[in-house]
Each structure stands twice: as structure tokens, then as C-alpha cells.
Image 1 (cartoon, helix red, strand yellow):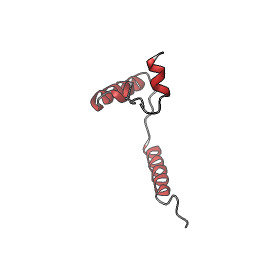
Image 2: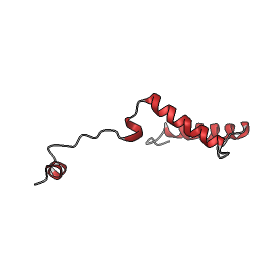
Image 3: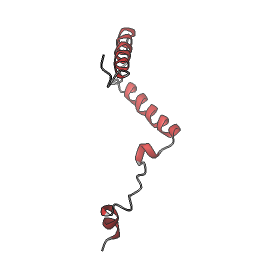
Image 4: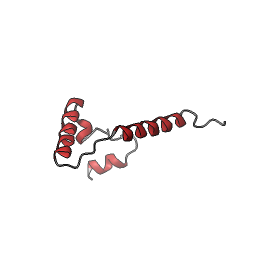
Length: 76
């Protein structure tokens, strides 16, 4: 009998869920890799830069979305 498949079906011994890939890295390494992707995007001409008006609109949308969450589940 394969012990790996037996452990998966046995509810008494839950498999430990460990982070993999990007989630397993320390935050400094994640930031370094993410910033490399951002730099490459802008160097290739595909990166997006917000205009001040676009940034204002995005900020308004974010504020509206977060305000609505505080009252979930309560009758008004």
C-alpha cells in the first residue's frame, strides 16, 4: 500500500499545508522580484502610468468600495 495516498484519505492525519513558490519567500525577496517585473514592464513600453485624474478616480472608487463593507449584514 502506498503510504502517501493512505495519508491523504485518512482524516486523522491532515497533511500540513506549507506555502510554495512566491508565498514561501521572505518579503524582501518578494519585493525585489516584483520590482524587477515592474521595471521590465516600463522599459518595454507596456507599463501604465496614472495621470493625476486617473489616480483621483481610482482613489474615489477604492474609498466607495471600502465604505460599503462596514455595514454588511446589518439592516438599514
